[in-house]
Length: 64
View 1: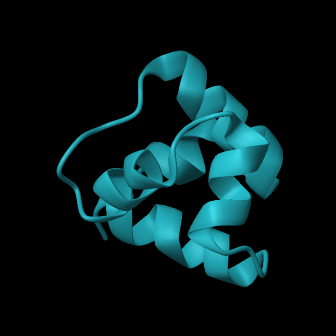
View 2: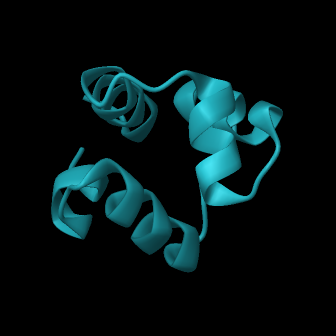
View 3: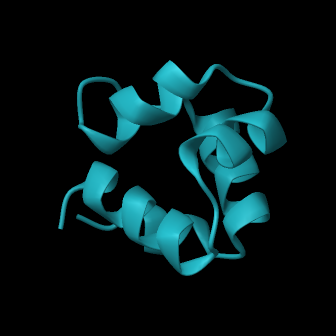
């Protein structure tokens, strides 16, 4: 499972829209969309923030 697929799965399981997740992370919705489509990758600090919002461990999100 790619990072984007894992991110989308975690977002959906947390019942968040892309817009809601982007607001919680302080980024544009297009950034979340690009991550989920594996067009770009969030930096390490954003990985930590994503894990905090989605209640997961960093290795769970980064595992491919």
